[in-house]
Amino acid sequence: MSEIMTIIPARNSNVLIIADHASAHVPADIDLGIAPQLLREHIAIDIGVAEVARLLCEAAGCGAVLAGVSRLVIDLNRAEDSAGLIPIESDGHPIPGNVAVDRDARLRRFYHPYHAALTASLDGMDRPFILSLHSFTPLLSSRDEPRPWDIGILYNKDDRAARIAIPLLEAAGLNVGDQLPYSGAILNATMNRHAEARGIPYLGVEMRQDLVADKMGQGRFAQYLAPVLEACRNALA
Image (cartoon, rainbow, N blue to C red; front, top):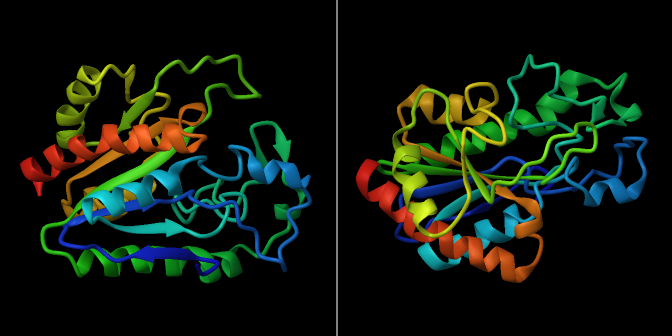
């Protein structure tokens, strides 16, 4: 794995899994000024995402691009001019090492290569379908905001896959959030750029982190998602 991303080639599949927050890695030459244990929490990484992505790749032959750097270094699911691109605080935790950072240097080192790899991967696929994989904490430290959903489905203007996926996931017994725990109309930067702007169908998924924190939960969610992903791909790609 590079410090920027891991690329898993597709095997007999036109599905690409994209995980913007799959790693808590912070390069040795970057000091965020935070306690080390914070790198194991949701502010640094989407817990369970890399493992579920790998299970889906193994089972279904999907390709994947998994980010190799923590969202605290640079948030790859933000527009380049976003104020939250290089966070100076996250869920009530200050990130002092980012206050006077060279923004352009981080963009050149991490952001541009990652998004170039996404473009290249999609360009190399025939009629691609994207699974955008994230996870969310069941409770934010900075807000009194319960998040009871097992899984959330997000989208901006293109809800084609969402309309297929939501009833299938509900039929599997899951508590499904439609545009929850937040709306893809507000935060959907990677999919806006690589899917909606190009007319590529996609499914935006948020898994609740306490349900995918161990191998059993990760395997269960891979099993939930595999048939949903196949149904979306068959209908749309």
